[in-house]
Image 1 (cartoon, rainbow, N blue to C red):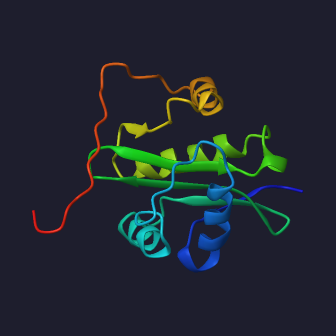
Image 2: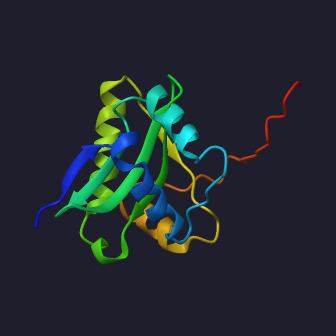
Length: 145
């Protein structure tokens, strides 16, 4: 069977993608941001940039992609266990980068949990470089200030 890359739509793919992400090691989910409403906002804001891979009716992989007008960002690449090592992750990333390039974005970033060595090897193997010159910091946005 062949892999088909399709645009990620909330109605068609959210439940399957969330189940895939939830069952994939190294994917960090956040109750609010990764809820159906959170992903729907993300997809609306970044229309046509996120993709799923399907094979024979089954979800084989999913990836979120967006940009802030200046830099692109990839999130939550996951490939189902039975579909790994067949180029699906690379195909999803390639499609995202193609769309970012078409939108005028010339650099893309992604985040890998420090202990997710398999993901680190995958991204290195596919041409991404580790940045040790950036310290990432996070904070929850509090209401009212």
